[in-house]
Length: 481
Ligand code: GLA
Image (cartoon, rainbow, N blue to C red; front, side):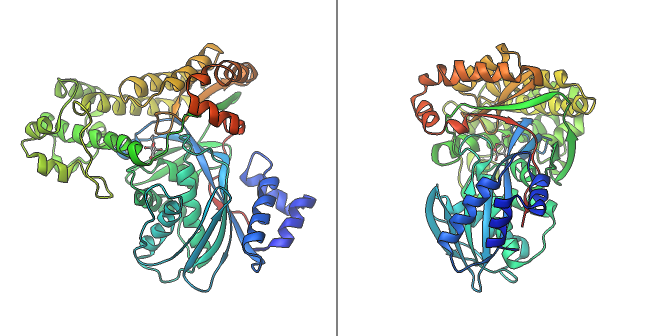
């Protein structure tokens, strides 16, 4: 906790203790953003002088797309783009949340916090707070809080702006209540906490946001959650190019996202049946991969999936069950919603092929990165891109444009990052080529190709600062002051 005026003075005068704290957490100067946050807070809650400040970063995934919920490893890194929160505890259980981008929200902390309508930003705050209530097994020890949220992670860009908000809200509840929760426990809890908003994502985003170390990428493994910092090869920069095609996780995109974990679950059940595996030991595609190893898993995929698409009745027949039972067992999200069938059925085999081949690429990537071989990482990123585009079908024409422009300007590797269907591409670029790559992306995509996507072009003209980011890994979520 810190006095608001003292912190404002410290930031303005460049006080050495304030600077040190910020240097440990960021690669860039955030004092301007913090001053704006403090001003917002002062305007909204003028009576509150003693406050806490915390950050929860967004992340960019270097490789390992849609693997987390399949219990396979991923390699993301935290970014200096984050959600900042200024807060002060209240004596009651009310949460008052303001954000310059959205309408104010206020609700009570209770055992089961009822959600706002789908798509409301307040649901992400509720998700984080509910996660803490669930972790503690009730509201005991918690206090309400007044909080000002102020983020700069581009929204709907596949950079986990939503998880940054959920994590920030949870950490605000922890800080206001003065309770203690270990980072690994918090990261694990947050993965399911975000299901509150209706999507069935995995735990990558929260783990990257909470557990990252400055200057390092993070290898994350799941069920149980484990994380290990990984140094990136010297002499490379991570460039993120945002297509500006927004891919939010609400309404139709929620269904589209949920088709993927559903198809992976169906693939798992079909593989178990066809390969005669012990069902009790296998919950995820990752379990099959670990049990059979690479070669046998790949052979198993070929043997099991003989047609491109499977309808629900076909999957039910394959598994010797009914569609009703299947809907209950495999096709209901963790939030209890029934997942409808995509037109023509699920491309179960292609989805599983992506997951397994991507897992192999992640394992290899960690090894080559630790050996300092950036070019070898780049090749895996290129492979990941093809697999995401063709087998997982999470691409978008704008992402194709960005990857092609990046590759022809000399990146070592380029791919989409995040859930897909829009959002961002990530490029591994040799330091000496960064300028050329940025220039090519600027000229050929933002200066030309983007006009093919009118909504993206409009967004770009409104927010050019969200387009091209040259990044170094940031520190994970923490209370700064
Ligand atoms: C979203 C989800 C993550 C992960 C990615 C795809 O960001 O929230 O858990 O599944 O998509 O890798």
